[in-house]
Image 1 (cartoon, rainbow, N blue to C red):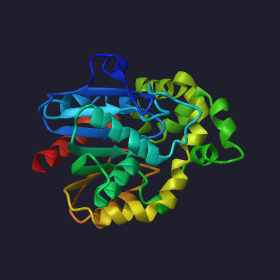
Image 2 (cartoon, rainbow, N blue to C red):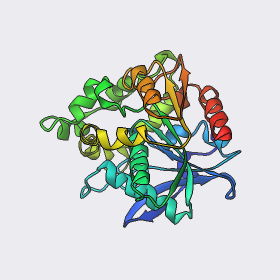
Image 3 (tube, one colour):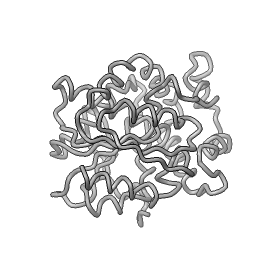
Image 4 (cartoon, rainbow, N blue to C red):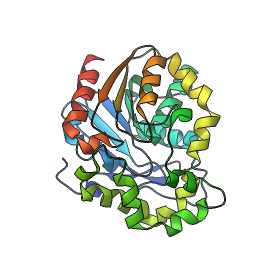
Length: 289
């Protein structure tokens, strides 16, 4: 677990004229591990595992625009394609030419866009390996929560962010854990604080457009995974009620060199639920690849 408040572990970096919160830790001469967090939270999701990862890797995390401590502009599309541009901009400014890419939830779609760009020779940052963790890449198999369906609704979505309460939001999040009775309240508080920071609630409807993009670009992203020729890990918590186990199995069947590791008792946020149980198979994979 980190020993300092998350905001003190990083700094703001200007990328394409926007302020992006970045945490860069671990030895500068170690292989980079490039971490892409999920919706609707932030890079703080990895606060329990970052020290362990940084023992062996240069770990770079950032908050996507509209999330956590990064800028949350009103004049922005919040397309996953633009979020990929931001990620690449962060890494290039840090002098990173290649790294191991890890995506969780929303971050898995940015990771798959990176794979698609690599296939087309369009990415300035190389991918040494790919880890996908509990994200609805195979969107047709996902079991979206009521709150997700409301947030992306044209009719109700714009009001959803303004009206949602902390109590309701935490109740929804708690159900995503494999064992809701084991939720650490401080983790829910941190996710909520990241959402309300800088009027982030007002961006939730726009950000929720990523679900439609997963349908629109399915063949671009899943097709690229089917042709991906680097080591891959599908690190999947089996009790996730949204990014269900069928998605994990489907990805392992799709990616030619994929290793599938099940986390049987965990839910949507396995790195928070069981840090050691999540980080050990990841480090084993990174060492082998």
